[in-house]
Length: 154
Image 1: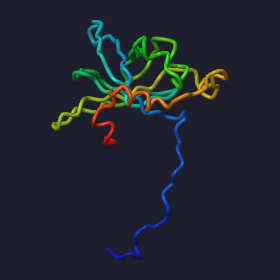
Image 2 (image 1 turned 90 degrees about the vertical axis):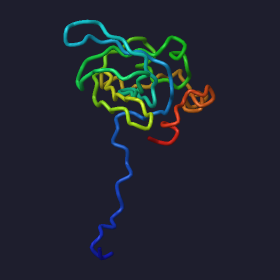
Image 3 (image 1 turned 135 degrees about the vertical axis):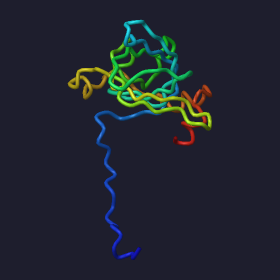
């Protein structure tokens, strides 16, 4: 390929997300009803989170389809961490499964991208009294809960 035919224009580096993402490995749980109406539960670990979304890694593979509504809840001990988005402090929150990432053969776990059902007007409102003492990624790393895959950026 000739160098003159390669598009060398700089790629946009702006972030088009509605809310800033924070890397954090925190214990959480999902609850939903399957196609037959049977309640299902799964223990998960967050890999990153924001006011409007969470990416979680499942402890064991689950059968769940995209766009399924689930209840997402951080474990009680994780809800009081500094720097945690306000939408995740309240306990259970309705979320939609946005994307399902299948586990890989090299030991990677199944992942789910969740879209939190929060009022978009609340996303831009910050808790005036909340000051972040330490980034969640540092808190999670100190606890030793970040998986090897998330540290590798996978």
